[in-house]
Image (cartoon, rainbow, N blue to C red):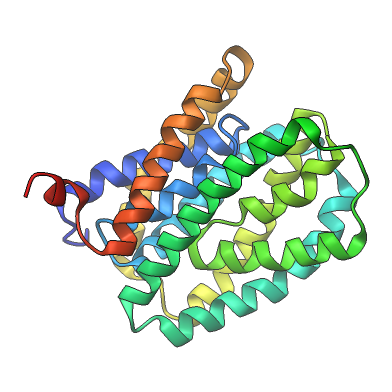
Length: 260
């Protein structure tokens, strides 16, 4: 049975899932982070993350096949075990604050604005960044943080990028490393999500309706990645993410404030 979602939910859901697919294919650095905040504008945060996880896993399947042989093994071996600690911490966060939707909304809003700030700083320092091999402790720390933020809001990208960026990996290797890392931890996240009772029977129908968009998004991402620069695409998405983060923090619709 299909849950009684507000009509605007379907607009946000289609946009979110398509952006996830595009990002997984390597076009638009980290734009998938916008998905959970967008969905949270229409439905509770706990329901948004629970709905998106199966769709993420479907998207991982398509992108994993494309990048399965092209990733940095050392980085994955360092970050992946550490991410399990972060996932456990994220599950504890959900268990403790899950009954207070407003706290979860604020947390996702803060993560959204933090990601926009991170991308702005990244753009400024990228040119001056010297190539180096990060220490093992850096990979462990960033893997732990990525596990936590990924569990809370499917927003584990920034810590992973912070660790990978100094290595100046070729783009395919960079994208492949993130794809493999998140493909594994998204499967691991099924365990705490199920234990916390986040999944509902009605989610299955919604996931089946939205699932084809994951394939479309991945194919679009691969197509765009080969033919276009993602600079302006990123700017538009980050603007949307910034506005969404502000809206989640203030707890009111921005359009209603502008036209009040």
